[in-house]
Image (cartoon, rainbow, N blue to C red; front, top):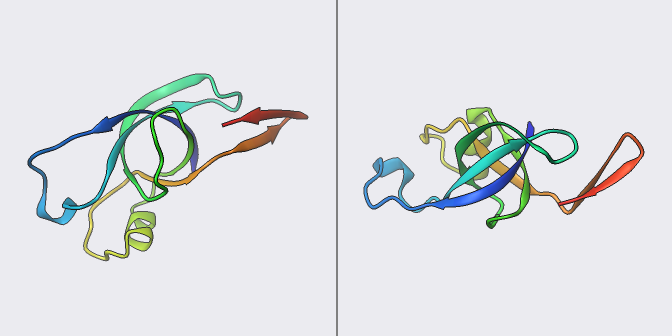
Length: 95
């Protein structure tokens, strides 16, 4: 799992039939202090995240199958939770 910030919504008028009804978001990987670090990725949103939210992203297809209750879906990147705050190295960081 990795930390990321939601930086945008994905709007798609045409997508794979297995993806119909699932919300897609654009996320930016961040380091342990919340600084952008790494690629931007498209993720399935299972946590009702919004733009600006700090989120926990799973990069295993099994998470999407479980959280979306769809054993046929093909997905690698899934937003699993919205982070309110976290502690790292004695410092508290807000989502």
